[in-house]
Length: 103
Length: 268
Image (cartoon, rainbow over all chains, first blue to last red; front, side, top):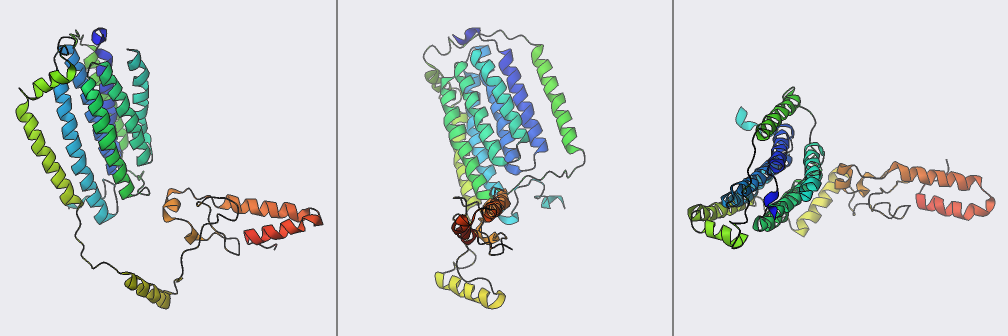
């Protein structure tokens, strides 16, 4: 059924989404939006992994994507808790305000 | 392939929306669009298990977590537009464009011979994944369990807060209020209600003081921070109506009077 699907469009879409996520991390200042951009990049790599699983004809790529999802879930939990703690002490969610380690 | 060509523009547009949206809530909703579209692309690519996992874990759990934290952190935490490093945004966009071009060019030079998953999925996708997870990836799978427990504990430790001062009782609060009144003359009673009875049946309309100015305390602080307070327009409306009726026949004097009473403004 899906065997005739070409892989290049999927990989290209994945690359575009990854790039947008990258630019988001570099330009946005709100820590939560930066985090969302990281999620976008993880999702883009998942799409590439699943497409490559289809290219190679085995399920290892899908298992890798599954592990990426698990790690992303753990990362989001801890990351958002850190953002909340920082917000509690400094009343700000901007990534520029947490610069105390610089000095 | 139809699903791909329908969804790909939507996904790219939504991803660009995350980049440009001013409010974090909008970014979260656009991220949901991207993730659901991705789930459909997984289903198209013979990955029904990951389709379900994507919807449950990403759109169900992770995005809800994002929205919860957005609610806790507050909607008035606006993104600042000032650049701390000069030229950072332009450089970032240029780097991104370069990176994207290199990636796309690299992909364009490769031809993929798609083997297809018909053979691997012969016993069913879930069975195939389970076979791999519980044989060659079993160690990684168990380490994942340790990771999840550590993450849950870490989140609990980070989110936990010790109470440093004793909790204020109702009597303490009353005493505090009386002290405020004695020292600063702060009003003792409840805050004024919004101007829902004057003209609009909505809490974003501020109450008007007898001199026609806006009573700041009658509007929720959150609404003021979001900038959705519908203020001057309604006051102007009342002015206009008062003037119209004022120039009309004497028979409408009753209405005029009642309008004056409602709006709290007399003719100057």
